[in-house]
Every structure is written in structure tokens, then in C-alpha cells.
Length: 358
Length: 144
Image (cartoon, rainbow over all chains, first blue to last red; front, side, top):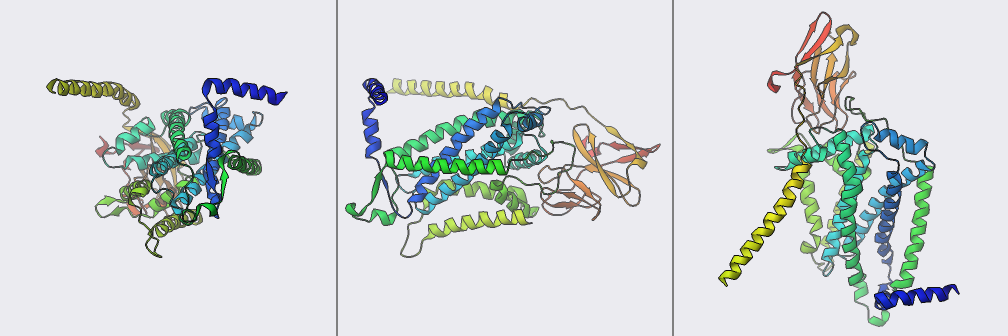
């Protein structure tokens, strides 16, 4: 009876929107199965966490009030008075961190399997833009509770933007809404966090997913060399999608476990006339940059240390974005790209560890 | 052909002007208007004997934070509390008798000179006078 109604509904829609070719396309799409297949799921996990972010973020919007006199108070209210408010806020914070983590994992897995090569150059580039947007999400969202750590992290972060040659000062003033980090900054970060970045992110994510769907999954070198009859494949729909959903359920459980057992804290309210507290540090995914800037001397050659540091990261980011255009081919046993990737990971890990230990 | 080229220029120019007429107001809108800052020349920072020897305190100088320090000798000095590195707010360290920025571990001596860590410039020094036991902090001359 129910399936009968379902069939009728499908026919009604199919008659009007011609759905059959779409379903056929998805059923014919094949996903390779090999020892590195697990990495195919990382992008999906990041996507799932993004959906969690949108949902929990919308819930928080019902109570959050941006403003110097209301931000900290409303977040405190959400955490102490609103039913399950502590849970929603904790899920939002944890899921944000997990999302950035999985975006990094996804990025490095595509780097090491050389999935950025022709014809997937634009998929890599849109992916990198999504990573930068995810970090901007994190940076702008960090300030919104208006607590002490967030206040100083924002002061430092926007001041770093100010050191960019030529346009830096103007950029800093536009970001801060004035010379200093004040209520005006809070309003701007709120607009950036809940409207501007989500809109941009959705468009770029749409493109990224469209590219993936059009081109199908990347096959690693060893798999590509196999004869057609030796290649093991599973259909994208329903086999791969169902596995994806199962993994999403596992991630949701881990997320809830973390959110319940390690609820996200809220620090003391920001005060622009109090010294920066000891142990101030940004979110973990900015730690490697923070630590590197901290270790630079005041002057490097004719440049101020921080300007040199910013130049280094800007150029590094640009080179990374353009990987598909300069990537070296593997020659014999020497794999330069593998070394590049390991070097970048080692730099990030070492700087992060130093940042937390010292 | 000539007419074609003329039309292309008119169309292209029109499109550019149209984009400009959209983006110029948007960028101008995002650039915050200058808010007049009360021109503070000096502030009273409370009785001198209330500030303990070998201690520091942040006071408001208009919209800016200023660090007031009473040294072992009893002398009171004042510096801009904004670190010249990345804008954090510095503090007085009683143990090392130096000015310290917790954000990136920058140190200044008690004349405001950057002595270690990333700060590229010294802190601005605010002149201090004590009149009838009242600490009066004035604006540095170079700040107008």
C-alpha cells in the first residue's frame, strides 16, 4: 500500500521532471574498491559535519544576541538556562573542530593519492578554497561569545591582516569596523559568520560536489594499471551511499560523546582594558601559524618579522592552491610530491606541538 | 567593423561603469566612518600611594589602554599598553621587573624599549606628574 503510493508519487514526479536518467546515472556510477578506498569517505564526513554546523548554528541563532553587552550574556544564557542549550552549543563547537580536522585529512589524502591531477585541478582548487572558508568560519565564530581568549585572538588575527603590504591597513579597519576590536567588530564578525561565509561556502561546495559527481572517483596509479576485469567496483548508489550514511552515524555518535563528556567552555567576558592573560592561544588549526610568527625575530632583513611571516604563509597557501599546475611527476623511485606533502605535515605538526608544549 | 568596435567599447565601458556603480557604494559602506575621538590630553589616575611599589595597573586614556607602573624606587611611569607587535595588551611582571606581552612572549624594559621577543618597536612613553599625591598621565608630545 505504502510502496504503491510511493510508486505513484515517483511516477508523478518522473513525468514532470524526468528523474529516471538521474537515477540511472547514479546507479551506473562506480566507486573503485582498493586498499586506499577509506579516504574516499573523508570528504563525505566533512560534508556531514558541515550539515551539523548549519543545523546547530540555526538553533543557536534563536537565542544569540550580538553586542558587547549581550554576546557573552546570551551565550551564558544558552548554556545555563535554555533546555539542551549546553548541548547545542557544545555540538556546534565540537563539530566545527572536527569539520576542520576532516577537511585537512581529506585534503592530504587527495594530495598523497595525487587526485588533484588532470582532470581534477578545479576540484582541488575549490576544495582548498573551502578549507580557507572553513578556517574563516572558525576565526569569525571564535569571537562571537566575546570572551577574553577570543578577544585577544581576534586582536592578533586582525592585526596580522593589517601587516599585509599596501592593502593591510584598510583591510584591518574594514574587518574591525574601526581602529580597535570593539562592538563594531562583533557585529561584522557576526554578519561574516552567519551570512557571508555560509553563502559563499554553499556556492563553492555546490561546485565542488558537482565536479566530483561529473568526474567520478579518482583511481590511484596502481588501480588504474589493473585490467578491467581485475578492477573491483561497487555502485555509488545505493552501496557507497549506504556505507557513507553508516559512517555518518558513527561520526554523529563520536560527536555527541565528545559534546556531552567534554562540554565546550565559556571563558571570562572580554575586557579591552585588561592585560592579555597568560597561555593565550588560538584554535588548534591556527596554532602552527601562531607559533611560527611567535618564533620569528623582530626584523628579518629589511622587513618586520611578522610581515615576512605573513608573506611566507600567503605564498605557501598560493603554491598549495596551485599544486595541480606545478606538481612533479614521479620519476623512478623518487617521489618529490610525497616528500613535499610529508614536509608540510611535519612543519604543521612540529609547530603545533611546540605551540602547546612551550 | 568600425561600428562593431564602437558598440563593443560602449557596451564594455557601460558594463564596467555599472559594476563600479554597484561595488563603489558597497566598499564605501563597509569602510567604517571615522568616529570623532575625544581629544584627551591628560587623565587623573588616582592617588599615588594607592599604587603599590613594584606593581602595574591598566588605566583608560580616552579609548586607549595605558600601563601605569610604580617602580621599586617609588617612581611612577606610564606606557602605551598596546604591544607594538600584534596589538595585545601588555602587563607588568613583578618577578622580572619588566613589561611582558603574554600573546607572543615579548619583553620591554622599564623605559618601554623592546628588549626581547617579536616586538619591533618600543612602547610610547606617557609623561607622568604627581600633583598633591594625584597621578596625572599626559599625552606624549609626538602624538600631538
